[in-house]
Image (tube, rainbow, N blue to C red):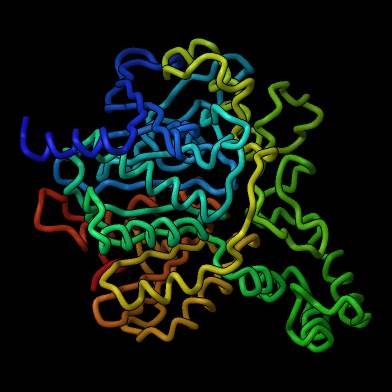
Length: 481
């Protein structure tokens, strides 16, 4: 055994190491052996490993020894990593076109991010997906606890996978994870500075349509609705003046502001805020139905119902119908056996578990970005330009508050000769931040624009990598320094 391996073993013993892992060669719904390396397992965190966090790990299909390692944090809180894996950027998805309510068939995703990176999809926090606790006390979590638990998870995972310790590391996530990604990255950065082992090669982080500063993110929804021609100039100007531009945390005694917002509400109440061009399917998608304006960023939870909706209920196409496939698949006994799920640990798998005990105890993470802007990291902040949950104009506003130097003004970026979105680039010494919109994408950008998002991610890695066998990509304008 190498000296690194012996040292890792020593650390595992000190860590009160509790973990299990299994290589999965076949999956129900897929014919034959999987053409990628899939591992599932549990890692214990907490004082006595009472919390068992479940994960899916897929090795890079290119060069796992050299390619980066990505830790993916799905939003919610309470949405399973499997959701991102199968509906956005993992190597397989479900054949929703031929789904009839029985076990769905598995299809390969040609735009999987695992073609250029190894990815860990984690079920966080406790109570999400297949993650569970052995004690009642361990069933509760919070923003700060989740960040620390996830850092502990990653330390233990790397100690049991020492071949990836030296790989370049990115933390990534979307939606509510816009708070957790910089918090976890800070835990890693501070752990490295404190000399904690293993030392991680953190390169930066990636956030898609993330929650960062609620007063900015939420407040941007009405200006965004105006820009997208969902409300009139008159309604917008009336609200802007009477509410003094403060639509979130407004003065409840301001009657004129309330009246102006009620007029706006009538215009956008039935708009699908997740992707404004797609149908609003009543309870099947998120709806901007009051002026609490999503005190949190809920994920659509329609997949929790195993009973298929009637054809009458689906008189029109609804994207959220796709989510039923994951509930049918993940709750199938043969699937749980294949994934090596511990029997009796959960009663029902839910794509998004809204009943978890979770304290949102960090309101604003702008200070984390400020600290990182003084360090040598590379950051990608992406926004689907048809998302009204976390509008791109709010994201761009908090980025500008960081007072970084603009090194590349607003311009289009391309995939296969077509405009894929728009980008603006910033820096502060060795800190680089790229802001990019994804044209036509909704709240979960890879779900809507998989080819464009894969190109965006691939270019980020190619621009920060040492010379390797990365193929030449056309339209390298997004990430060029």
